[in-house]
Image 1 (cartoon, rainbow, N blue to C red):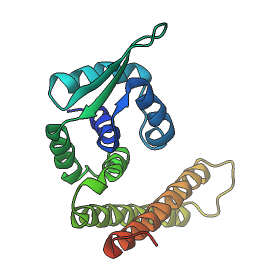
Image 2 (cartoon, rainbow, N blue to C red):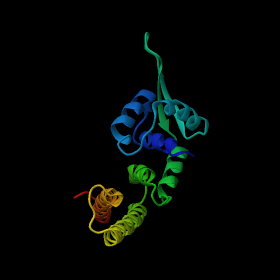
Image 3 (spheres, rainbow, N blue to C red):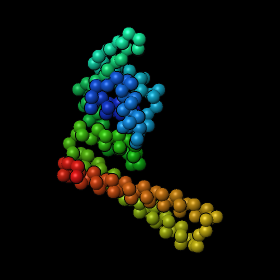
Image 4 (cartoon, helix red, strand yellow):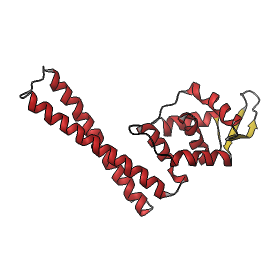
Length: 184
């Protein structure tokens, strides 16, 4: 099943919503870390309904507006979402990892703790790789001026180092929260 459908299930696990409400919440909550186009919403809602993972809770018809269909997640949908959240994300699949974290409240904190610890190791490894690449480039091409290709290569690697450091810090914060079973 596509991660788009899991994003929709993640919203419906919190509360019943109409398609319009989901668009609003996608824009305000999920599109920060996982992009979904509006044209993907309704076809995926239909598929989720056909699969028995969501159901129509109500059908509200105003006189001059299109009908408002409110969907809710089924028990089967909750179980499918929980199973997906507990599966480790592929290395480098940051968007999917964050989407799973968004529904981490549904599963045992120990499961999420293991996933975040693995993600931290992944970022620590990449951080060291970037640092090593910069050291090697500087040794091979020193001194570097701004009109040389390796100057730009190092500049991009420095951005990668910043991202990896930030990711490691985030993981460490979440690990602490999970171990304490609360935000501090």
